[in-house]
Amino acid sequence: MIAAVVVTLGATVGTALADDTEQAGRYVALGDSYSAGPLVPPQTGQPAGCLRSGSNFPSAVAEGTGATDFVDVSCSGATTADFTAPQKVTLGENPAQFDALTGTEDLVTFTIGGNDIGFGEIIQECALRSPQQPLGAACRDFYGDQLNQRIAETAPKIAAALAEIGTRSPGARVAVVGYPALLPDEGPGCFPVVPFSPGDVAWLRGIEKDLNAMLDAQASAGGATYVDTYTPTIGHDMCQLPGVKWIEGLLPTSPAAPVHPNAQGMEAMGAAVLAALGAPVPAAA
Image 1 (tube, one colour):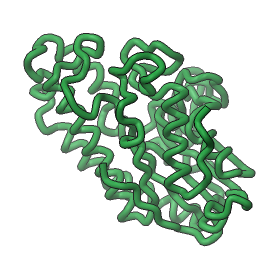
Image 2 (spheres, rainbow, N blue to C red):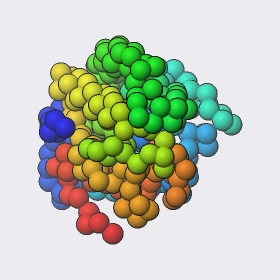
Image 3 (cartoon, rainbow, N blue to C red):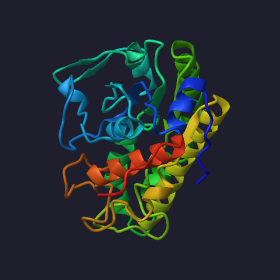
Image 4 (tube, rainbow, N blue to C red):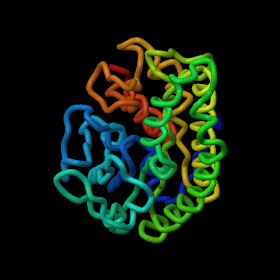
């Protein structure tokens, strides 16, 4: 993966995060389920349908940076459209995430883009199609170049989001957080435990890397920090044994949503963000 790019957007937060004797001030976490931490205990916040965890990576970042005002409005299922419009969820509605930005932010983080390209749909289609051709790549053949096109179409949405954050929170440092290693970084995968054929594993791995590379490029172009969470989570993908895996499979073995980080994965993502920001990284528990 491309190395993280660290850029200071605001002198105030740049100083606060570089000097661990100072606090980060106001920190707002935006994003989708990879920020929210669905089903990772404790589930907290409103609306309940966002499935926000009090042990998600934004919580680790808030603690690590010493944020004095931490606001987490991330929500499972969010797309870039939900930054600027309310998102309907079970038992409620999450307000437009950008409404949380008051202009006093020192730090803003987000994960976004996976749902823009159809993350849930892709997993479902591949889980159904791939087992039909365990020696082929049925899911890759079904999608063709559609997902590459979706990634390209999402790029300007990320650029627009970064521009809007810059307008609303001009003094904030902004971190675009990439997606962790969902599948093994090399090799055929673990069919049928994770029901993707070797050909589809290789293809899906490439799609995730392409999505992360797009996020990296947009962060760089927008003057933001890109946080690589893929590299530090290699070897802890959904094919690993419980206790080693930080990403749960389609049938989770620890509290987390399928194909999402568990508590250990969230901790690792938080450590990656803190390292990219130059903030102290707590020792692993």
